[in-house]
Amino acid sequence: MKDDVKEPRVILAPNPSPLTGPGTNTFLIGRNQVAVIDPGPDHAGHLAALIDAAQNRISHIFVTHAHLDHSAGARRLAEMTGAPVLAFGEALSGRSPSMQRLARAAGMGGGEGLDMAFTPDQRLRDDDVITTDEWQLRALHTPGHSGGHLSFQWNDVVFCGDIVMAWSSTIISPPDGDLADYLRSLERLDQIGAARFYPAHGDPIGSPSTRIAALAQHRRERTTQILGALRSGPATAAELARDIYDVPMHLMGAATRNVLAHLIALTDIGAVTHEEKLTAETKFTFL
View 1 (tube, helix red, strand yellow):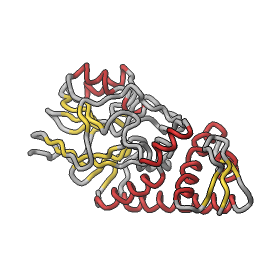
View 2: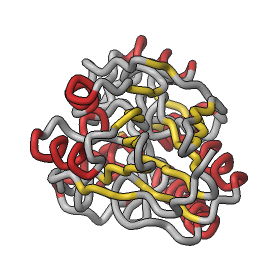
View 3: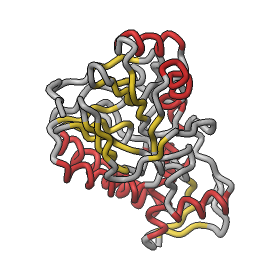
View 4: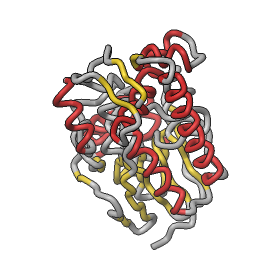
């Protein structure tokens, strides 16, 4: 198997926003059998740029997870190239048992732009390996940001989707996101010992272990802040977010979802409790 190209090509999708940074990075590896990783939004100009960069030699389309900024262009690109779409599953696939219970009991959605129309042609599971004459990709199931999130190992680098980013921490929005899963995924990725991470948003990460340690520490500090605030009395996730976060109002919804993820994890270990039914207005109490 010939795999002498050391760096992927990257085509930036034209979808900048407060949550996507400069936009979605679409990565290409291979020359004659080109793999596309995260085709991005269903944007005609972006898809045409991918086909042009690949010289119309796209053989596989990989999707890290079924959010619109990553997966919406996959089906159209498959129709244009004849390449199969490979991913963990549909938008709700891979949810942890606790998140499934939360979705059923609270009727709660993540509100993160799920691509509910997404369906892969081939489902990948943890440690599945796809091999061609030019390259080999290993699928790593890394839930936390979404239940069906995959990262892809290529030689000594990892395409890590939204699970690790250099410019921002990852939003964890229950029931699609799960903080306990996220922390386990960070540990799993750290054990790979990769030389570099390529996130779907922002610049490459040259010191993966250092970045992972910083993200894990950030979550520990956020947990400490939440518990400290709850010692003053019961509060909702939104009230705690306003107390803890210093972000513009248009990002406060995402901050509230992150706080809720911490509160659910703290409830699961018996550190906090909440009223019987979990809703957006549920108050949590320190135990």
